[in-house]
Figure 1 (tube, rainbow, N blue to C red):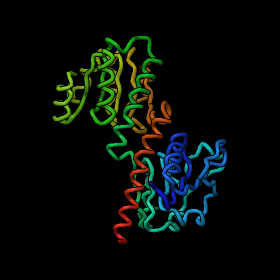
Figure 2 (tube, one colour):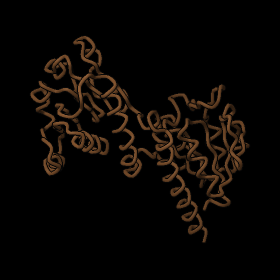
Figure 3 (cartoon, rainbow, N blue to C red):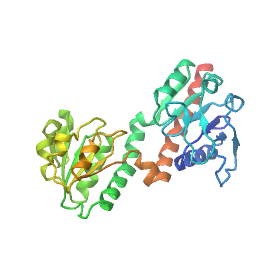
Amino acid sequence: MLTGIHVAFIGGDARQLEVVKRCIQLDATVTLIGFDNLESNFTGATKRPLTCDVLKDADALILPIVGTDDNGFVESIFCSKQLQLQVEHIACLKKHCVVYTGMAKPYLRTLTSAEQISLVELLDRDDVAIYNSIPTAEGALMMAIQHTDITIHGSQSIVLGLGRTGLSMARVLHALGARVRVGARRQEHLARIYEMGLTPFHISEIRQQVTNADFIFNTIPSLVLTAEVIAQMPQTAFILDLASKPGGTDFRYAQRRGIKALLAPGLPGIVAPKSAGQILAQTLSRLIAEQTISRGNQHG
C-alpha cells in the first residue's frame, strides 16, 4: 500500500494513466499536472498547475517515458499548454523525493544532480526492459506484415543484437517459422543463439549475411547498417530499426537504393499502451513502496 505517500505526475501519454490508476488503488495521494484535457476524472486524484507550491509535498515525482527535452519541456498529450520543468521546481522538492522517468536527457540529470535529488531511469532496469520487449516484438511483427508482401514463415530473417529486445524478437520469428540468423559481438551471445537452435554470426560478418535477407530487425543503438552493408542487400529487403533514436541504419542510403527502412523506437507505447502502462505501474508502485520502507528504516 502507498497510504500517506504523495505521488505527483507531470505529463505523459496513455501509459501514464495505468500508473495513476495503480497509485490511487494503492491509496496514494495523487496530484496530476498537465492533465487538463483528460476527459475521465480519476476519483482520488487532483489536477493542479505546475508550481513549487504543488511539488513541495511530493514524495515521488513521475515524468513521462522520455522525461524532458533538452530545454526541460515535458510532453503531455492531455494538456494544450507547454509544461517546462525548471530549476526552481526541482529545488523545491523534499530531499527524499525521488524523480522517476523512462530515460533522462542531460538537462534532467543535471537538474536533479545539482539539487541532490534521486533520479531513477526505468528503461535502464532489466525487468522493465524485458517486459517491454514483449509489446516491442509484437509491434515489430505487425509493422513487418503491414509493409511487405511475403509471409514471415519461411523468410530469411536477421536480428542484430541479442539484448532484451533482440532475444524476444529472435524467439517470436523462430516460433513463426522464419529462418532466423542473429548477429552479435559477444561470445556468450553467439553461444546462446546456437543453443536456441538459431544461426549465429559475428557482427563483423554482416555484409556477407545480408545478401539474401527478407527482413532485418536491428536492436543495436550504433551505426551497424552502413551504406556498405545496405549495398549488399536485395532491393526487396525490409529494415525495421528498433534501436533508440537515431537508430543504427543509414536511412538516407537505404532510401537511395529503394530499400524500405523504418525507425520504430517506443513501440510499446504505440501498439500496446495499456499493457506498457501496466508494466510501468507494477514496477513504479513497487519502487515507491520500497523507497518509503527504506526511508522509514533510516529514520527508525
